[in-house]
Length: 205
Image 1 (tube, rainbow, N blue to C red):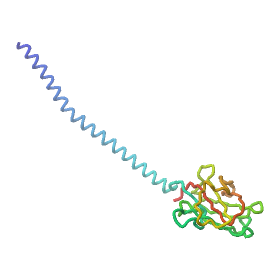
Image 2: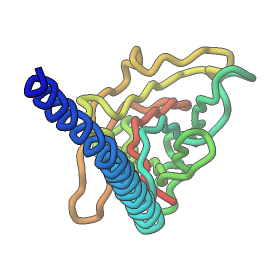
Image 3: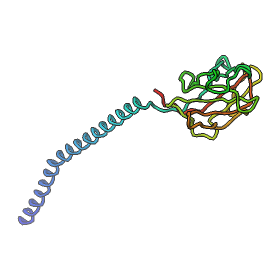
Image 4: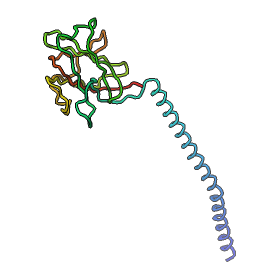
C-alpha cells in the first residue's frame, strides 16, 4: 500500500512539474509570437511606405497615365450633359496645302480640360479632300484600339446633335503615322464642320 502511494505521488509530482514547465514557457512562447507578429507588421508597413514612395517618384517623373476621351476643341454639340465639341473649318479655298502656309489649328483636349496635342487642317492630296493632322504631345498617345480616331463631317452646323463616336462614318481607324515629323494624319472629304474624337492614353503631369 505504501509503495503504491509513493508511486502515485511520484507520478503526480511529474504532472505538476510538467504543468509548471508549460506555464513558465507558455509566457515566453506568447511573447515570442507577439514579437514575430509585430516584426511582420513592421516589415509590411515599411514595404507599403516604399511602394507609395516609388509610386510618388514615378508620378513626379512621368505622370500617372489614364485613358481619356479626346475631342478637337471647338463649339459644344450640346449646352449641357456632354462636353463633346465640333470644329468649324474655313472655306476649302482658304485652306493651306502644307506646313509652310498657315493652317487652321485647334487644341486637342483630353478629359475636357487637359491639352494633349494640336489638330491641323490642310487641303488634301486630292481636290475636295482635307488632310487632318494630329500632333500629340510627348506624354500622350493613342489607345491601343483598332479605331482610336473617329471623325464625322457635317454639311450643316451640328449644334443640338448628341454625338455617338462609334457611329461616326466619315472616318474610323488609327490614321497614318508620319515617323519623320511624328504626327498622325487622315485624309477625308471636305466638310465645313467636323467632330473629331480620339481615344487617348494621357500621361502628362
